[in-house]
Length: 352
Image (tube, rainbow, N blue to C red):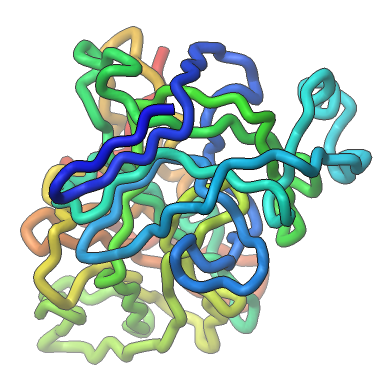
């Protein structure tokens, strides 16, 4: 074990083991279904919560407490409900230690007191693919990733951060999802980024998104239309996959009226977290070194991107990210909110 402290940040290296395997369960999780909702470490939870499994960088004074010690004493003994025979077969042959279990504690590498230029903003898949419906909970989730090194310079374990391999053990992509680790660690090139200062603003703009919206630092304003603020509970979560993410808590957002909404991720205060050079993308698309350079897909209004319901963008000048959503009454879709053209707002192409 190698533990050392820097003046402005702390590395907690829990293992020197290096995992280079590309097994299906052997890569960091793409994200956990169900949201989690447990308090992150260091925030005084009274019962065993989720363990930090994915490396993290804390900004703007956000605290991550050091765990008392790493231990794996309670192996998973269930029968993998909700998983297919193929998924179960991939898990068998290893002892898995579930989250939220007294006697199972671990912690990935993390840094505190950081100033971070975020590399990627990953909005929840449902945001891009599904129209919210009146009166039904809608999950709003944002994950921020920092790529630690250019791929050509990535030299683990010299410039990597250590995480824990996670596997889905029960009820994937549901509120009852359970994940655990097999104690294997990996050396990664990405870390989650979190800050207590950042908020989520939801504004209802009526039958369309006004073309003259201007950001005033905490809300969008228009000379022709009033966009009404919609309250939402939004906080950092340590989810079931062991990632520190931003999410709408208390069941998510439950819209009351049809129409178009602008949802904005922002900090109303001076922050050490920058989105100025971030791209919008999904973790599966950028989490491995590409064989060929990334190629941006066509602009959001082309035929190729019409399969998406909404397209999140990064507004570099205002250091924010936002997405326009249409709330519908039932199973209908309506027209897709049209995002302004922005290089930062382009979606990433897939690695070949």
